[in-house]
Image (cartoon, rainbow, N blue to C red; front, top):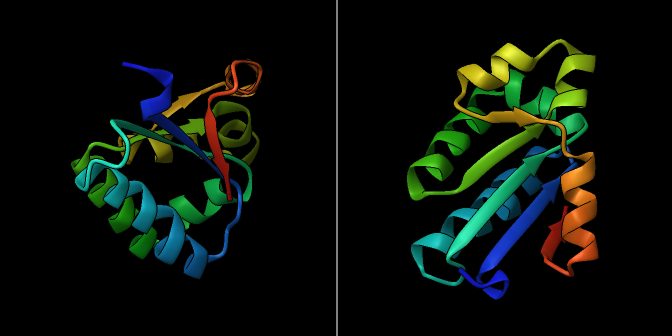
Length: 114
């Protein structure tokens, strides 16, 4: 798959309205409508807590996963907040993202930051 058909969304904003009406709306529709072949949503910072505490957002997570969105969370953030297992229970990959994010930037990958 060409890098031109992959989108990474770095989600750091814990605003629920933004999550529902931008992050999940776009990530899911991007796959459903074929705008991108692959979409990865990266949970980082404050969004870690939002995902683990908000059941409506957890529903959006399930919908996105069902649509084929790959969802991954920053392991350092999850550990700092004591939420690693909660993320894993939601079927979210948990890994260190510092080096991979740097690589994405160096390779001029498509990265949308919210």
